[in-house]
Image (cartoon, rainbow, N blue to C red):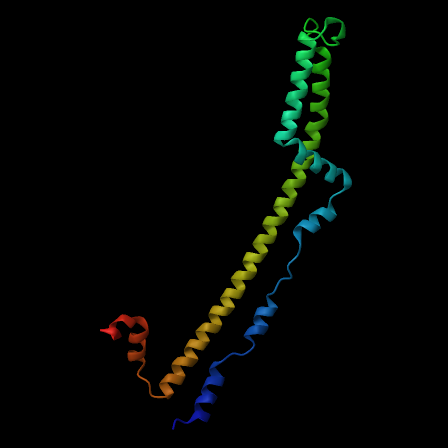
Length: 178
């Protein structure tokens, strides 16, 4: 019978407890980045973001296209007495309204894009924090596995097991089948 008391003493010297405590030291509390960005933005920024999201759709494009086509067709081919922006005048009212819409939408879209960029930056910073946290945890786990491996080797050697035979069987299990 192997002296278990002596082996246990050697294993306790080798083992470094508190691996779970090490992991907990490096834990970062996860946060909701979407909520943080939403809470930090003003009503005007949220309005600009809403405009950006809706103007950048195919539906908005089709709406503007249909409005333009209807305007130009009516004022080109509609009854002459009911035309209000003729081809002869160069569609001045249509050009004016189109430019006013563009002048109002352009800065709002730019503000919305800036809000989206800040959100994307906050998300990427949070992803980086999570990656760093994961790397620390993996390092601690690998360190723990290394210690467990050393403890297992010591225990097997104390039991009188030939480590070369064990390693051959572990590394080349197909050799045992032959």
